[in-house]
Image 1: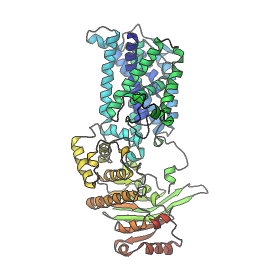
Image 2: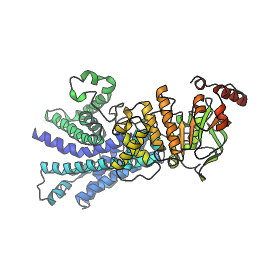
Image 3: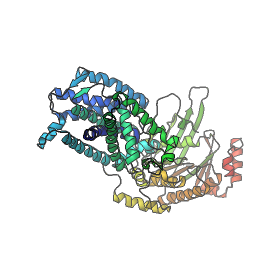
Length: 334
Length: 264
């Protein structure tokens, strides 16, 4: 049981960075950013290469995160400047990232066990042993710092403009915000966090692999939904914290499943079905029927979207404007 | 002063369905003017407003605000000078954000946004005073998400947001049309009060002829992309709805076809 808890905390905190990034783009910006499937292993690949080249682990991790941010910028530019559909823009970037990763590492997999890692480096400063508990401590400090920074940013004038872009693009444009720039900024920050997540993951598991991004997006969405449904409130700070808790809970369930002998090869399917179920719950009105039985599913529990329950998979209709020769509906109305 | 010269706008240009939505519009709006705009369906009223706001680009002509040519500026660049409210109560406020966050965004209309805290106690004090002014009790609900407000409350908040930074021009596109009669009256009262208090130059589209005659100091009527009537304050004071419909029929040569305008 102890190993399950350790695993949940370690993996959960590592993927919490990704969940926060996904929360920012999918949920707050309403931008279904598929870049992240590529950004996660890219963060790991860049970090691995840097470590092999002799760069200090902490700096290597930062480079991995920055590479993630750059990938977000590419998607943002493809979408806002070249007017490509948001989903396609993400897919294009994610696909191109494969080449970048192979070129960066020179091969599909880089083992890192022979090198110092970021946890050992940081713990070494404080003369602490590198064991599971102390690794979790390092991750916890990183996660809390990220949570506080993100919370601060989203409450600044600029951060509010980003959130308003996700909530009502027409309005914020009429108030003088260049929504293209707001989207670009959110994509850079979101993918920076996903890159950071990948970097921290490769440092913990001791290798970087170009395949490590498969399915991470669905897992992150599951964490966001689980966190918001169970721990969320209608305040932004609460939402950010709930996503971190959701990530820990999701990884805990996976670890528990493994412990109970569920076959690991079924996990991706189970996660997909779980996410689908949670997304469908509001329209199936199961919440109402289960409301009395499971307190966590009570309908009166407030989420940030009173009218639109947590559905990170669906972008707001205004967020998606592609190029076209015909005038948009808005233009045609009288 | 707002000056529109020779504005033209085509829809479906170059196709057999080509429509001239704005046909050589020339309009000068003096500072402090309150124009009401009426016209039949498809007359080009909303298109005109969107062209002025920069939501759509024009095919010919120029738009000047206090002598500055803004014709080529996109919407977000004109936003500093122009406040706009749409018919749809969902369109002018952000549902997911609280009242104070919406106001904080509007407070910086058209300005550079940095990394300073958006909702400060200094700002909320000002927001509270401004909201008290419209008398709906919203000043005590600053932290409530806007999505939980009624349509009338949202349009009233949108009015505060549109005027809090004192734009040079306020554009209202049938902003009470989607509200129930009581809320519509309330929002119109607030509109009139704010326009007078801040001496705002205003362009208001309405489908309600009676409203068009009662508010403002100038009335223009549009038909098929043209301004066919331009009525000054003195003349407007003497007009009745019936007389206005008669003038429309004699000037345009067609029967006024908007039932809403007559029945409302």
